[in-house]
Structures are given as C-alpha cells and as structure tokens.
Amino acid sequence: MKIFIDSADIDEIKDAYSSGVIDGVTTNPSLIKKAAEKQNAGKDLGDYIKRILDVAKSTPVSLEVTEYRYKDMVKQGKALFKKFNPSAKNVFIKIPVNPSFPDDETRDDEGIKAIKDLSKAGIPVNCTLIFTPEQALLAAKAGARFVSPFAGRVDDYIRKQNSIKFEKSDYYPACGMCRKKGMLHDNGIVSGVDLIAKTVEIFQEYGMKAEVLAASLRNVRQVRECALAGADIATLPFDVIKQLLVHHKSREGMEKFTKDVIPEYVKLTK
Ligand code: E4P
Image (cartoon, rainbow, N blue to C red; front, side, top):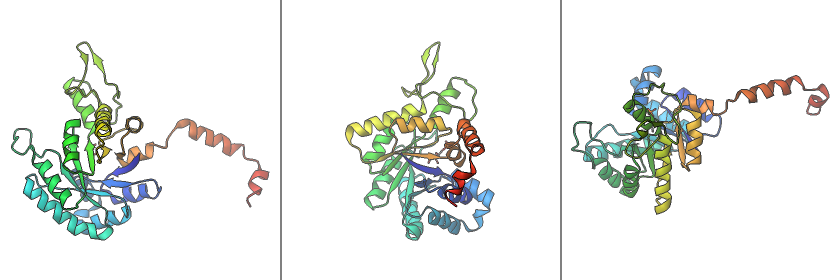
C-alpha cells in the first residue's frame, strides 16, 4: 500500500519525505488555508505550492478545484494543471464526486462530468469526498485515476447520528458497532474501513483501473485495516504517519539492547 501525506504544510511534507517512504501528497482547500495561516504562505501561494511539488518530485500531488459548476471545475482544473504541472510533472486535479450543497441538489452529476472531461484531456484526476462505493464506481467509470473514500468522516457521521461521544482520533471498529436496534450503519456501510473494503471489492470484481485511496484516516489501526482491506493508497496526516512507527516495547527493547552492548562488539566496526 502506498502512503501519502495529507497536508499542505511544507515543513511536514519535507519531514515526511525525508524518511524515503512517502509516495505522494494530498491537499484540500482546508489544508491550504491552515498552511497559509501557519506558514504565511498566502502572500505567494503559487511559489509555495511549487515548493511542495518540488519536494514531492516524481510522486503525485493532488490540488483541489474550488469551483463547483461542471464547466467552471473543468476550466479551473485545466488552469491549475497548466500552471503547476510543468514544475515537477506530478499534479493530480482533485474533483468532488458531487459538488452539490446540502440543500441544493442541482449539481449532483457535475463532478462526474468534470472528471470525464479532464480525464479525456489527459489530466489525472483524484475524485474526492466519496462516501459510498457507488460514488466511487461512477468516478472510476468517468476516468478518475484515484478515488478517495473518506473513512474517518463516515465513522464520525455514524457516531454523531447515534449520539456517541468521540474524539477525532478515537478508533471506531472496522466491523461496526451494535446497539439495541442492531448494527449502526450509514445505508449499509458499518464503518469507514467497511466503505474502503466494499469499494475495493467492487473494483476487483469489475477490474476497475482506478486506485482506491483511503482518505480521512485518523489513527494507525485504521491504516492497518485499510491495508488489510486492499486499499491501494492511504493518505495520512503527519501525526498519524509518525505514530505508525511507535510501540512502547520497541523503545523498551532498544533501551535494553543499548545497555547490553559490549565494547568488543563496537570495536569490530571501528
Ligand atoms: C483527502 O484527500 C482529504 O484531504 C482528507 O483525507 C480529509 O480528511 P479529514 O476528514 O480528516 O479532513
């Protein structure tokens, strides 16, 4: 499974890439806003984004459109690609699967149309804000190279609907939770990992070319479960990437091995 960093913070991206095991970057308007505030990047945002593309070099960096009408998304996607792809040839354009707002369903299929147009023009698309395997299927049929189901936000939604208190990083069981009335779910999806697993299953069944990018992950156990479910990619916040290596027993073992080193052994390599 490929590991992407879900961040627009250049320091985090540099730090993550220095490990040599990061395969790409995903950004979104909220992450750009956060980075612009922290890094004062708003002043010259174009240059700032080019620095990110340069750090990520030959690995994909997703830049999201902010428009929400079909033609406008295509226009903006093409403009973003034209402006930023030449610097490191690694830009993916992120298109929402459904750009409608909660009380306005007039744009339900405009994301799919935009994906189709951009893909036809040879621009690689990462389809975002996916909450059902059906949305992922249509995005893949339209030509998206990556489909991004939002696992963490599904868990949040199920918990909120059922008045379960939680912190953003709290683990939610992949197999779902049972209450008096039965299994908690969102239209048959019992957890974020279940959303990933069902999407992977459908894609394998029909030989879809798009890669399943597990997004909105908040803890290491979810990462493991997405890998077991067969996700092609997981995009992770920097703090979750750092947590992937942590185990108390590794640290304890290291301390003991270091205490036990005999000088004769060290001399062998001097
Ligand atoms: C994916 O590409 C998104 O940027 C991201 O994973 C959303 O995560 P969040 O639900 O933690 O905001």
